[in-house]
Length: 164
Length: 188
Image (tube, rainbow over all chains, first blue to last red; front, top):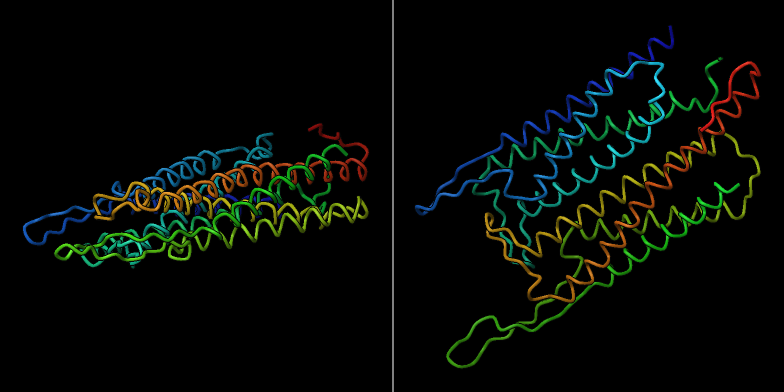
């Protein structure tokens, strides 16, 4: 009974992480705004910044991986591999989130020492959607850290709670 | 026993790599006098400085690398001065979890600094941000060196985490085999 609860808890956690990564991906992809001033129209897309492209790719990889692990049977020998892959996915998520956050901060506040003006005043809707995607990415990261601890505990069983 | 030596060697390398990255980025500064405008025939010069504190991502880079190198130093000291006495499961699992968290931290810091450096090197036409590396070449070179050291630290922290997790697996398999003799001991 305890084992079933644990397994269902793990599945729910992984489903939530998959949902959060997918949400971050979709919100970032659909963020696009066209602004025009002085007869010059500029369009802000997520492909303008390399960091946002990396964010999309990393979240896509994490979503596909979570979806595949959802269907892993319980007694399979691949669970030990899943622990290391969970660590790699967590590192991917932190790196993509922090890179996108660094670039978005420059877009929001500018960098006066380098002469870079903030762009959020001209494309506010784009900025808001990028913020939403970053928040979803952060939720996915927190869920993945919990998943990492959970899979470590269920594979390694360090406190020898399960009697074989 | 060889596993402990491999872990110690990896930790020493990771400590040196992250400390080097933090120091090189922390001392990164370049001052240049540039001609800003020309009024008549007299050029107006302005002294501009490029420091790592101007960019929040680089500040995070320095702080995170200092934290990870401190973690590695602590683990090296614990491993040298507390040799294989009471390897309890709690020690092993806290070391493994701390290693994983620090691996994520250094990966985040290295990547944030890498993307900011790319922005400084290439600029961004869409947002009308000019590149700064053509004027501050030494600043960019030092930053690039610090980034390479940090990425080496990322790979080393990933290896260290993998070795720590495998130590946990071996310990739990040994304890499971010792407590119930009828179970098979898994061979890693």
